[in-house]
Image (cartoon, one colour):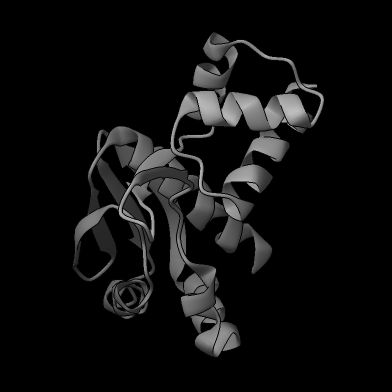
Length: 155
């Protein structure tokens, strides 16, 4: 039930501008999920939703993530480089660390720099390590999950 509700939340915020938890609670109710505000709040936290500016200038809930579309420009090359270059992905606080094969970090970092990654403050690449500074630890957790998904899908 929780997984279905959270999947529905993602669908709702993808299709509609949801400004408040009450708006989300009302939309869930229309779909047959009679939930409390506390449940909506927990779901928002677990899904790591953030508030962004809507086209009308109001705040709205959204899901920050690595924009795969930008990686798909040359997806075979980019994902192949990524899968062949990256050995591990981890984080500490609000810093994501990618360990790469020797000499590959700058290529991967350049590829990631061309992608649109929400809440990234900056990146730094050495010979075999990339540091990605994000705004919060939640952003780091989310980015690690997304990058690991890309890594495992192309391994």
